[in-house]
Amino acid sequence: MAELATLARPYAEALFEVAAKGDVQAALQQIDALAAVAADDQLRQFADSPKVTSQQVFDLIASVVSAPMSVTLQNLLRTVIDNGRITVLPEIAAQFHRLANANAGVSDATVSSAFPIAPAQLPDVVAALERRFGRRLNVTVAVEPALIGGIRVVVGDEVMDTSVKARLEQMRVALTA
Image (cartoon, rainbow, N blue to C red):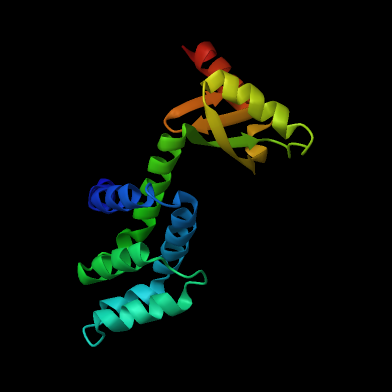
């Protein structure tokens, strides 16, 4: 949703600016924990209740988050709650991840394969993909039997699809054209 992205961007940029002076990895873990809690529907209903104060919402979230929150994250959480933007926290976390990755020269990649990739083969696959895309990659592997064979790699808005399903689709289009 473009609206959520627009609302989340200033929060994510401000958080990254402060976190870049300290420990970005700790901030990543903390914002992920906040985003996971904020994604809960029951919490959202509780936060939207007119009978509940901002401090009660903050206390509830702080008690549920397993990792201790830094002062920066506490301030972010208070600001988000005060502005009625609890639903934006997952998008703030996603944008914060993108900023941290861009700063580190890393991109997230999703590799979909028809069959599980053997742990011994994964480093070779990752190395080949890093050469192909020209940057370091944080790879997430997913098994997608519908691909029939081969892999599909998504890095940001770039897609490399060498799957049998894609090739069959190309042949179908060529034969029907």
